[in-house]
Amino acid sequence: MRVLIVDDDAGLRQSLALLLQEAGYDVVTEGDPEQALTRSASGTFDLILCDVRMPKMDGVTFLRRYRADGGQALLIMMSAYGSEDSALPALGSVTFTSRMPRTLSVFPESSGLV
Image (tube, rainbow, N blue to C red; front, side, top):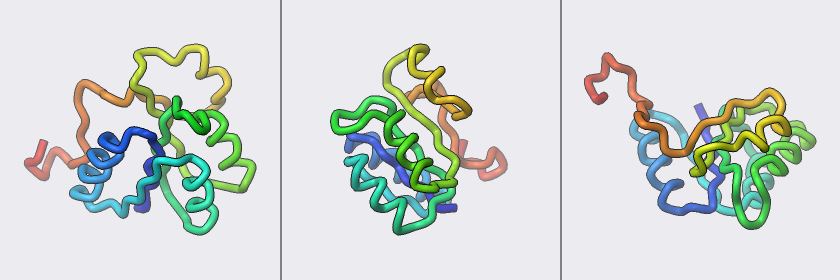
């Protein structure tokens, strides 16, 4: 599975990438949403993890532009802020999660790594 992480927080990008790579995912990271759109146009991704709040382009705009360009990957929007209730209606049918969940596991329970 190929994953694109779009977030302006370099530390979070690196942490998520390491976790997902250790679990066997092919991971690409991008801190600039414009560059992420360019990458997504030139490569196929199965999953995109995208921050809601970024300085150059917000996640909702990224989502809309990605879909308008024909992108088909599952998009999961992330936020370091506790509630994005005002943004959720604009997102439509999309999965939203807090960026720092209480537990994060990308490993199957049978692996013994969780």
